[in-house]
Amino acid sequence: LVRIDGRKRYPYDCNWGVADIIACFESSGEIEKEPMSCPTQRQNRQIKAEIRWFYERQDIPGVVSNDQFSGDEEIFETDHTQILDDVGTSILAHAKLVENPADIANS
Image (cartoon, rainbow, N blue to C red):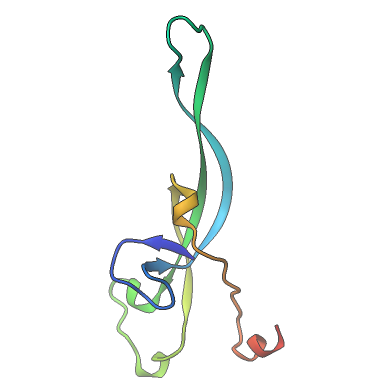
């Protein structure tokens, strides 16, 4: 689960969406120079993640909500990817995705 902009959404105190982590990597930022008396340099490093978003029915433009699906937590895999710059505050928790609701009882 990944933090996103918007209104609060249960069970967290923020809005969130479902995404798959494709890759985590370390990114080097600008080189920070120490004072002139010290010739050493150090890099500002940051942990980033590439994610693939899953959409819910209401997130897909042009899809009309169907009463048959109301109450079900149905999500769809997409090609929408994004690089998260601040992994430490963006990733909230992990989620187990199941195809069949009966599988939830068996996990």
